[in-house]
Image (cartoon, rainbow, N blue to C red; front, side):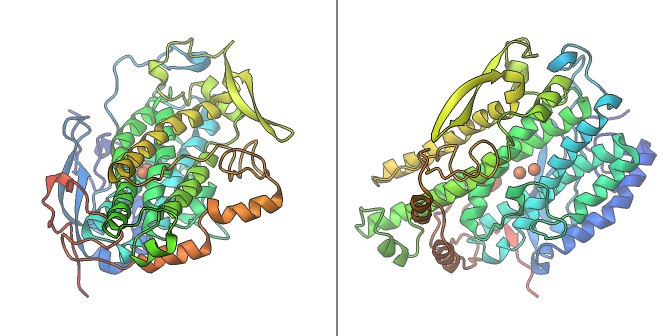
Length: 483
Ligand SMILES: [Fe+2]
Ligand SMILES: [Fe+2]
């Protein structure tokens, strides 16, 4: 009997979707596999590919115990296809088909729309691994290196998850799309990744932590809305991906928190009370807090752009079709069709930001972005607690949604982080205080020296409070391969 909870390892591709009896899809995936391995091999420096990394691998989709931890060489990681268990009697949660049984096959009328959403989601997964490929060379500890690789192998698995759907449900054009997911490259001139934030560099570890906090959280919101899809295999796929995604945001939040902690500790130890005494702070080998704020501004605003236009007919169509729901759609208590509802969106009226109620159906993106902002604010509050506890007079904050935007109503206008429209000259002058400059980047880069001794940490970051899998402080999370 097909076991839908535990993962079967009897095919080359671990899965809980009965691949061994689904020969056509198994064959298609096996054909795609070498290209994937090839992509992985070419990406991360070889010395790390040969190292033993203490990684978790999904062995079940049971929420109570779905992973096991062990040393693995990354090219031998068992990337698998895992779907959360089917919910008996599940119905389409929203749109014009709300209440009808969830689809087990793709409805013909929505085929292209559905494929496009899966491809866009799929494209982000390998992109982030590409962006992060060089970071292990400057890992501040083996603990951090392990976390980086954990995020990387799971993003690889998320690519598998989307590729499975393409192969299983979209025939020939699904296979072509799956191949294209390996052809595009982050930052490439000829074939860039589909979304802007995924073509930016992740040049240092503070960027990595900000990325996993802010951009993986966009991923979370997109997965949450696809987990509400009326297309049941997509919903089940995304539900399990969310289980893994939580760790990525944990890495981001604790990473930034540890940077802040170390800066506070060093400031206090040296009697520095002014967070803007930047040169003195930097001379002590830690990252000053205004630079942390600038990095936050950058990554938050890049991530806001990922939500697309505030008012969007595509988003309305996807919701109406029941392909994509709202955040926590199943817990909302309205009619799930939004026939008469309105939602507040920002608009520009001259040089004022004004808010206007529009049909809620067209404001699906805006709503998801608002949910994202609320979610993202939580960690910022916890970072501020670290500052308070250390007695440092500095407060981090999310910039206004109009600042530094490339997509949506605010793009092309000069807003400051408080949301005030400013002149071009003021904007140019302010930018050096609002976004990381080349000099900030150079400074951070100067701190990026590897620290590969078990239990030791680079001077700019505090150790974590607890180990992964409850391991002790001196645990060797990566057994480095020495060439
Ligand atoms: Fe992912
Ligand atoms: Fe992620």
